Image (tube, rainbow, N blue to C red; front, side, top):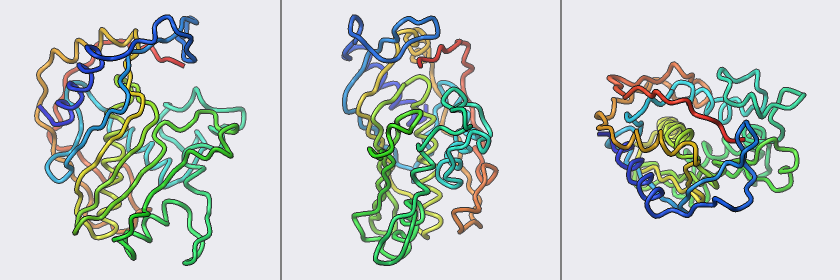
Length: 276
């Protein structure tokens, strides 16, 4: 069983056995039939992954890692908010009449800010500091821009990355305000583990720990049967993560720059309703 499987299982069991149910309370999300989408949740979940030992991808079910990386590059490399720039359809329901998701995600990372060293957007500032000031404790990004929230079609869920160099290892923390455990957990873990690998390689560093901090970690009521079925499975060992070592320019990576060798996973037979 992969380490990602172990942490996923521990987190879900804790939610199901010890979590808080908002059934009976007024909630914003709803199902397609108009029924309120209630959850069982835990507050302040923290999962740690040692990227130097193993890549954190689940095997209890398949994670579509290439699509996850494609979305990551859309946000962090293209810094785009336009649906047409994304290969998958995961953001279609959030597209506005102008074909964008508003001033969210990639849009925020692409905004220029003034520093004493010059003008940088958030991504380029991270790369600059990792190369030129790796001892800094100020290497971070934040896309939860209150000034623009009213023009975002979805408030950012994964909103902040903090990078920290210890010796020759790059560690990172992803802060997430809300996490749907069934549909999004390992998707986000894979994305930001890959991002940490990318940033480390560009800066000439090795990968260290990836820490995932989730404020509201929940399972939707209609997802509980699928989650319970997954928890009964025995997972496989994690695949070998391979990245093109020749790439030193962050903007030269593509989704084909990565491989998952010997990725084994259990089939997933459930239809997953989406809360909106």
